[in-house]
Length: 181
Image (cartoon, rainbow, N blue to C red; front, side):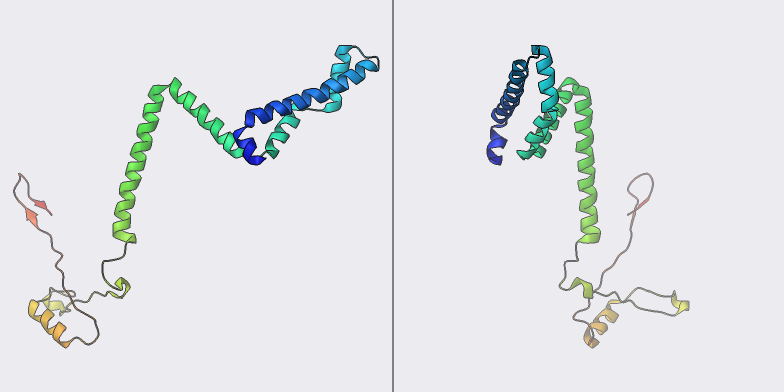
């Protein structure tokens, strides 16, 4: 029944309306037979029956799928409003497109930099070691010579492997003003 109510909503609504009208007419005929005028009989029947709109709404709610019907109504209403004001529609669509694009770009950067693990086996076991020199030689984290790296690899018993990287900045002087890269 609920699935039929989804696809044949108009037919169910018409049957419900006919049923309510039938009960009101039956009560009205009884009231007329009891000696009331047609107008009084109609008002008395409506008072006795109660709020027909409320009965209609409560019955429709029992059919199920009301959330889908409400969403459909909201979408139709929104589309009608958007068709009436194309300027607002263009601005709204452009704003949504820019917002979605910006969020996608930001997420891509955050994912690559913060969320995605490093492309190594067991990245949580990576450590960073450096050469330590006396304060007179420049303090902590002094550059490592290639010979020292090769010695560390040869004497290594603690790490699976040792690698090196060089993070340095360069000056570009090809333009009017030098720029640090």
